Length: 442
Image 1 (cartoon, rainbow, N blue to C red):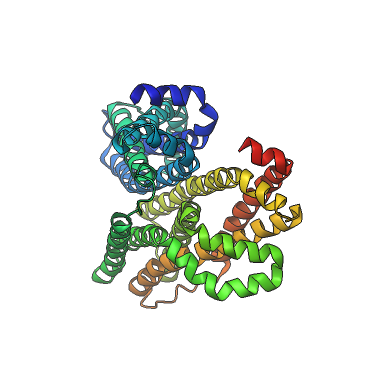
Image 2 (cartoon, rainbow, N blue to C red):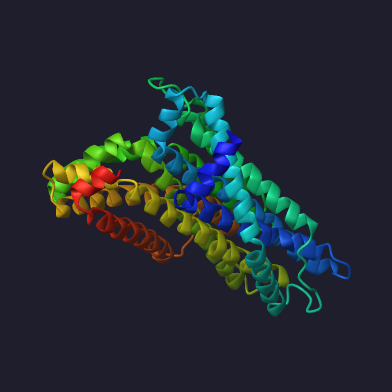
């Protein structure tokens, strides 16, 4: 099956582009921030510079590793579902679930290795630029040179291999079962419940800390991320729950397209979870981090305290988290949306052969986009707000962060623009193919 995996990747590189993009971006982030540990361990680096580098590499590296695994799992889930007929055919000609799992994991390992190799030079360049930024703000001494050594090489390849193989094993579990056998959700739901419990514990740990603790921001930030990950796991159920009050409204507004969208969303809620995961994570991460930093900056300004190097380091760290990790989540959202919408070419062709007009198909896709965006924004906001309220209550003795809705509106606008633009543009291009050709080609 490993030989079959190699031939599969070699003969159909286009189908693995989305997974390769996710692996490449993930490897860039992991190796970029792990290179800071190599730099800090170099000879001649002073203690203050080493502390700043280790802090950034550890915190952002932790965020990055979690999000990379979730992003690759989301992308591979879409890819494996698109290959359902192929995997079912392998089952019919005698392949066992273990053999299918070995083939898909082998494919993911090859893609992860390729993504890691392609990410080396971008990671080196990004690490140098990030180090220059630290030196410009006085957080790292000017004489420190960027180092790309054994820590980053070993950590990058190991994390990517584990992420790709683990995500592939999760994605193929359902597709590799015998036909007619109902999929089990206990493992997935248990992981989601564990993530929610850890997120609640992280947010709750904030109340056990002092307002002056240097690590005060870490607990609610990690808690919000874990809450967002847990809510993303339960996204199919959350989507169906929101569909009940929103369905009649969307049917009234969008007409026939809205009716098709409500029916499709109800049946495809599990598939849409691959899109909802990066959307919930992006909203929760961006909302939590930006508001946490805004509350901290206002608290320092209100106290009349001059900003220290540690405060500058923390601010730079948080904006780096938002700029790189949130950008990664946004790109993965676009990647998942493009893959999922392109795969629906046959579905769109069948609907048009059944009498739906191209305008109704686009209206259906637009209505589905509204449902997905609202679901992702609502639950991502809840995850981010939990950490923000806890942090504000401890830092300022007032649970109201006092920042207004503008940061949140900016995050929502970016989510909406990315989701709507990617989905509608891809759907219009796919539905432009003649219906008969679309069904026959699929």
